[in-house]
Amino acid sequence: MRGNAIVTRAKRPLGALLLVTLLLVSTAACDGLEPGNPVLPEGFSQAQVPDASVKGFVYMRPEEPISVSTGRFLEEEEVGSGLPSEVDIGLWTVWVGPKPQDFGMGFQFIDLSALDMVAQELESRSDWAEYLRRSEWLYLFGGEVEWVEALKSSIEEGRFVGIEEAYPDEWELIRLLPEMPPGEVLGAGFGKLDDEFLAGMEEQFGGIGSDVRNLVDSARLRSAAFALYASEAPAELAEFDEDFLKEMGLSGLIITKAGYPGFIINFLFNRAASGAGLEKVQIEGGDAFYKALQESLHVLIKNFGNTFFVAAASEEGSARALMESVLVE
Image (tube, rainbow, N blue to C red):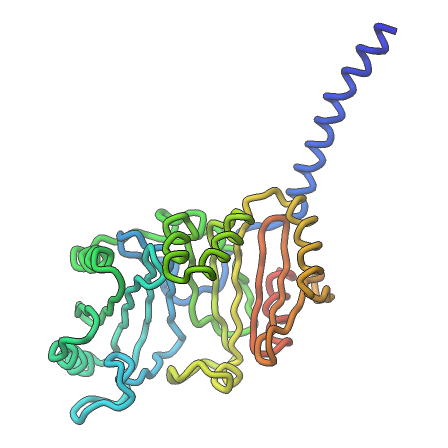
């Protein structure tokens, strides 16, 4: 009997070890994700971010310069005589600070004479937000004074950091973007969902911000990457209304990773998706959950272990094509 008892006690830790091993193996198998060489806007991989507590970054660079109404820089629908009605922009970057209302934007002008006129007009206005002119760039700022000044100082002093070095977790998610997307890539970026940013969201948006923070905290989401694609590259930056989005064939992909093991996420996500009214659909390369949030917004969600892919587009077919570009690679 004593010998049998020893054998029984020995089997228990062995069984537990086998269970843990199986769970770890199943997690790895569910993920099945290898960072690749995604299609990104020209220059994105070498882009640098001001060293000023930046929590979000957007990098927009279409293949051809895009026309932007001059009134967008002056917050006016119509501009005065002597100013061009439109200017051509080659690159547009956005930085988001510790709070969602903290921002900085950089516009690379193609025509320096147009930039001179816009900068002179801004100089004559005392009610406009902070701005900065550097070479072919015009920078606009808004938000809390302390962060705006830190961002401006970083730009003026040339203190920038590379994305891969300063934001390694976000960079790894960026590398999961598709290598063969179904359209031209217009822009890409990332978000850092740390406590500082979530606290700022909660402060600015109140109850809604608290709900978002609770959701992010419960799933242990800390980073996100995204990209925008278009079947028709825009020649000008129009209003982002329903007609404009349909004409462009705009679609977007968001990638984020939960802080729980994949086998737990698989179980919880399938139950949560069904409870939220998402429909399980078959697409090339696997299955996903689908929901039409409104007539012009179709969303597909797919998880690989604890990594989530969310494809959204104005048409269901475009959302499917974008998700499939991730699955079939």
